[in-house]
Amino acid sequence: MGGTLALARAEVMRLRRNKRYLIFTVGFPVVLYLLLGRQVTGKGYGITYPAYYMISLATFGAFSGALNGNAQRISQEMKEGWIRQLRLTSLPANAYVISKLLVSMVTTVPSIVIVLLLGRFYGNVHLPAWQWLAIAVTIWFGSTIFAALAVALGYKFKPDQVQPVSLLVYFLFAILGGLWFPLSGFLAKVGELTPTYDAVKIGSDVILGASVSAGLAIGLVVWLGIFVGLATWAVRATAETL
Image (tube, rainbow, N blue to C red; front, side):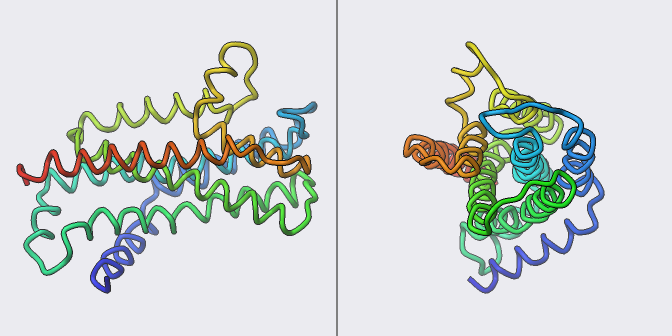
């Protein structure tokens, strides 16, 4: 386990110098919240737009960090033979995948915390401490689900293929999950099946003080199971070629 943690720490240190990561997971959600957090009036999913955009954009940034960056790095490291080299060491066979999941759990935290702080001090969103914590944990868990999907995509697609594929998945889940604007009608019904919608709706229900539907929480767990299953299949399917 020590070697796995050391590998994860090295990856975190490398990400700290990655400008692309900082722009898309931290900078982009921050800029969008500054543009929308106080300028848009009305309500989304029953809560004010400053609160709604706080939740949705924190999810958006964390989702991006978990999926896009990880999928591309995994694919590139496979091409360069880094995963093959790690398998020749004394590290456990699953050390690489576990380290990527751990890194995602760490690196999604800044975007969540920064956007929530903006919601409090820029968007004037006032909540009890337990609601802030519940929202942060929900978003964090929701984004971690996509770290498993990143493993699946990174293992199955080449570097020149994985970027458009991950971006397509990224935008589909962002739009259908209501991360940019609340959905209604048919799209809303489709969006209710996504983990991104589950995360945003749980956060909005927490703010409203309403009972969180067990179906929303179960939905997140089911999607985690689906993506972990895909990741496991992708790793095993490519094991013989590494």
